[in-house]
Image 1 (tube, rainbow, N blue to C red):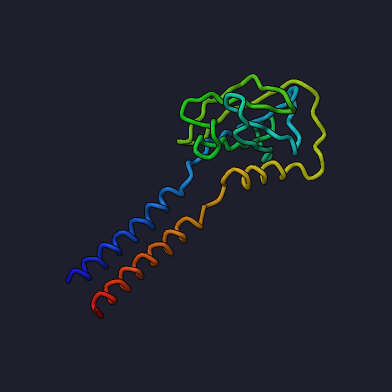
Image 2: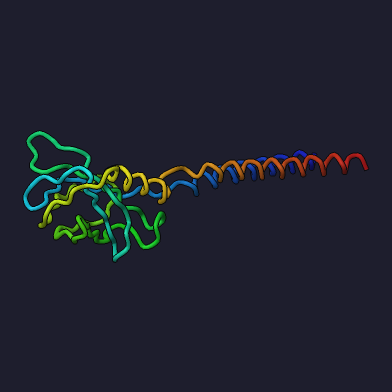
Length: 179
């Protein structure tokens, strides 16, 4: 009777380990800023990178995503990461500074991951000719380097650990019965 209780407790422990590790592995969602980008009053070219900073720390990069009919300027999108993803980055209400063409944009936003934040940006200066292949490289690097994916290995390790614990308990109870 006692060994059944032990196996039941081990099973509950295994379930708890698996589900707690999955919950802990979930990243905080970023704050997504979007809007129009104009450079010296003209629509920005594709390939222009928009960088988001909080307190001088780079917390995300975005890019031009296209144009929309009836809207002056090109549309951009930037994901600004949470402090849990990049240390020192977003928390509710923190001020977000944007950089375009190496210049700080006058408009500033507030970090908010409860919805999309619209902020139209404009900067003065000559439009920069984009480098070949630069339009996707910044966005790809942001996704790959800053935890854009699910940490699949955490629940796997927890599950294997739970199976080892259950196997040890079952083996121990069988050994005790044999003695």
